[in-house]
Length: 304
Image 1 (spheres, rainbow, N blue to C red):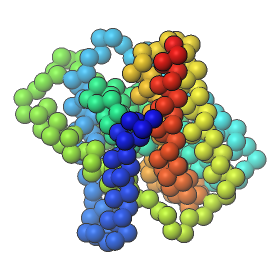
Image 2: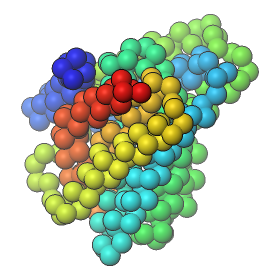
Image 3: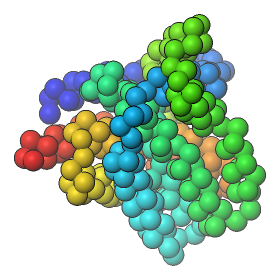
Image 4: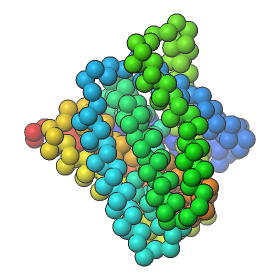
């Protein structure tokens, strides 16, 4: 466990650094807001495009998809059930908190623990999850909250991450794995993505003035850190998944909810303060739960 913890520690150290810098006003609040947009619109799409367009897809992604979707759909179903009898705005935050994930942290941890191969698999995992998660969550939140969902679903067509995934797949299928200048530029931009996005994750944490039901936050922790990983582990045992694929899928299952969930809660008139509390609580707790979850995965692999 110590080896895994030491590999993950720099990831969370950068997150804490980002929080400290923003709290200290270094260099300015506007700087961090602009960096968020830079990561979202330029750096992450470049990373996705570079990795997906050059990936070897000949082996197929069937088993990997089974693991990822087993975790996500089981967790979001439980989040929906947990939310029955709760006011719609709070239930929508619980739904997101039970199943959505922080892609940025996932990519960084996959690379930190498993190197370039881990990052490659994590990017492909993002390609499988990001469109499905966004469409599913928005659809269910529309049922809970009513209105606004259709325009947001149409807006997903313009999502730069989804567009970069589609572009990467198209270039891959066309055999354009190494276009001069284009791919080198994408790799350079992609290399800058991970450290900057981790600082931005920390800068977006809100530790002061958090409000929210302890019971609802606890339900989100159960869905996110127990049910999601358990579903992935059960699916992996049933299909005898590849060890590295299984461990990267387990990372996704154990990730805290991403900051985009807060934006979605505000857009759809959910409970944004509760969403902020869930995101912050999960991110802090994941400092411990992520290495423990990975240790459990490694122990299961050694037994089998």
